[in-house]
Structure formats: structure tokens, C-alpha cells
Length: 385
Image 1 (cartoon, rainbow, N blue to C red):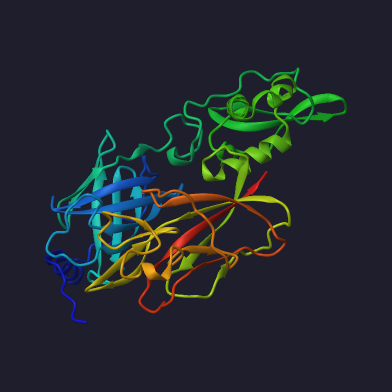
Image 2 (cartoon, rainbow, N blue to C red; image 1 turned 90 degrees about the vertical axis):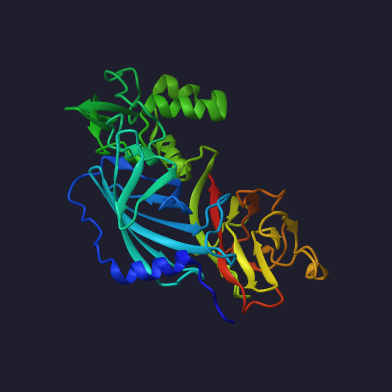
């Protein structure tokens, strides 16, 4: 099939040939956390959706697509383009490398450099003028608890106060040691309570001290936490909180793994380990992929629904003339069977309960013809604490 590239795709390819600006090496600690969702605009014309995840050392990675949702496709009417990013924040400076992976100039790579100003706005002028039209960076560690903003679930954290001698043995509190917040456990040595440091900072508890953890748990699980208010935070509760909050949601489940389920294969993808028979789990499916991407057939689908009119209408199954295959065509299957992922969600994220069978859980996309499919769906697996 003859391919027609937009003016932007050609500009990308040309820039990739001309631009040799290397990414900024991380020479300073980052002042900003750029984790989050953005609309990235290039030359006030070409807008992309971006999702970035940053590491504590300032490096970050992300994915994106062109055009951004709600923005026009400039220079053509073909399929949207996908991209990946890798970069670093050094002080107030930011740089990243963009590689196009979709139908627009696939493999073209170029480098962007810019800066972050005090209100969190991100922009640059190299190699073209660009800005994050929506979304702002967060101050890296505003409450100075040693936890970067996107991983800090308890803003404004301080020490738990002077050591509470009424707490029982092996209970936990956060103390301030020379301006650094650290966890201490009340270990009893020769009958004398002796606070002993175990964790050097608050990363294990996502920026939360003991009282904040108890408040969060009581808000979610009620009076069952009253004993901990009286006797202190136990090791088991601390460990369960760490597991539970790994996904940023306090819901009694802990994250196990993420699976990528390719759209172009009928072979199932299985979890790394067997899921305990009878144990409760939660499956979170997300993302979109394409069933075809050619003149007369452009179908985008998520775990349960699909669209063939550029996102105007999403249907369970596939729109005519493919509706004769039934409502399960392009569904994300679990253990070789169909499941109800629920009502349509414009964020393309769905959750269902799952009971372990003593074997790995398996997932696959159901289709009658796989070769022209592209992309993948994602499944997160959580176990009940």
C-alpha cells in the first residue's frame, strides 16, 4: 500500500537527519518531578498526548501519540502516530529523545531541550519552539521527606513527634534525625525500650509517617485500626501498607505484575506465577490497539469496545460490516474465555474481580484474523492482602 506522510512526518524525518543535539547528562539533582500526563505542542501546531514516569535520579521515560485527543491532525488525514520518549531532568533543565514508532516516519529520532520555570511550566526552543500546553511539573520534594512528588502520597509530612514511650515493643514511628525523617522501631533490649532505625527514609511508606498511615487506614477500614492508635503501628500493618499503596490506591490489594497482550497473536500471555487457588485477585485491563489500519478499514479497540469512526462511536464488538462476528470480536479474554469488562470507559480502563485457580492466569485478544492487527492491551494483576 502506498503511504502518504504528513508535513509534520517529513519535518520529523528531516530534523532527525539534521539535529544531533545530545540529551543533557544528569549533572545536578532534579528540582522537578515531571511524572504525569501532558499535551506537548511543537511550533504551536503539532500537539501530542504524552504520559511520563520519572525515576528518583531524574531520568524519565514515556509514551505518546499524535495528534493529541481533541486536537487536529495537521498535514494529513491518515492514522495517528505513536512515539516513545527517554530523557532526564537536571536542576531546572530538561532534555529528552523522541522516537516515532507508529505510521508517521517510523524510527525517526530527534532531541529536545528546554527548561522548567518556577510555576512548573515546561518549554523549550531547541530544535524548534515547543511547550507542554497542558500539565505542569511538580516540585521534586516540597515537604523534604526524601520522597519525590509523584511517589509521595502524604504531602506535608513531619516527624511523628517525640518518641511515644506508651507504644508497645516493635512498634514504629518516624523521627527527625538532623533534618532527615527516618523510621524507628521500638526494640526492647534487656527490658529497656530502645528505638532502632530500620528504614533510612520514607520511600518505603511513600512519604507517609505513622500517624498519617493510621489515619488513611482508619478512613478506609474503620474501627479495626483503633488498637494501633493505642499501641502503635505494627510491622505487619506497615508491610501491608507498603504493598497496598504500590499502585497509589489504598484498597486492600497489592500489585503483582503487568502483562502486555499483543493484538496480532492468538497465543495467550500468562502471568509469571500461578495464582493461589481460591484467593481473591483484581484484574485491571487498559489501553487501545488497532485491528486494521488501511483505506476502508480503520478499527481501534480496547478490552471490550471498538470504534471504526475515529472515536465518535464505541460499540461492544465491532461495527458493521464486521458485527456478524458477534459482540466478543476483539475482546480481551481471560483463561481462554470471554468476560464482561463492564460499561464503556472513555479512559479505556476496566477492572474485574478474579479468583485464583492454582495456575497462571492467561490473557489473549479474540480475533478471526490477526496479521493486520497492531499494538497491545495491558493487564495489571493485584492480589488481596
